[in-house]
Image 1: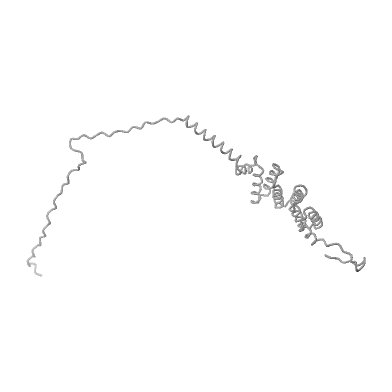
Image 2: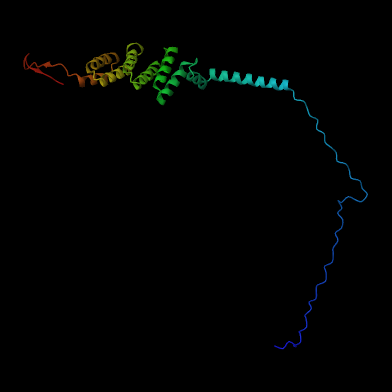
Length: 227
């Protein structure tokens, strides 16, 4: 390779002219020279003293109003009466009947019986006493106290409502469940005589056969029995 070869000329690139400097006009909001800066006003907040006596009075008044409202709610509303009955305090008989039914539905048999007896003690005579006594008997049966339930049914058909079939019917049901057929049939006869309800007669007829009847054509010694 020949080192004495001529060197090619260098290419010159022409640089672009510099961009003109654009000077922005001074802002109109900029403070003029020689103008004094206005001092900022300091806002003073005057603190007011709290009247603690007034605050205490308002709190006491609100407490008294809430206390009176609670007392009125407990004494004058059914829900309030039920709250008192649940806590064992003085309440109406209706509240104790309602609470007893709640306990019975929840399976608290002893609590239900206690609530029912409390209601019965507060108001032993009322227009719907038969229905209420049936609730008490139901609670006794749920607790396995069949004898106590029977006493309630006897109370219904002996003194409270002798002409109402419901007392007889439930007593007969308990007797049949205990396989006491003879006392049950006797009570069926009494129930039929007192209430004139033929269902007792028909029920008894299925358990007790009719007495034999003498046949006139066969003589006094020929008997025909119909069941």
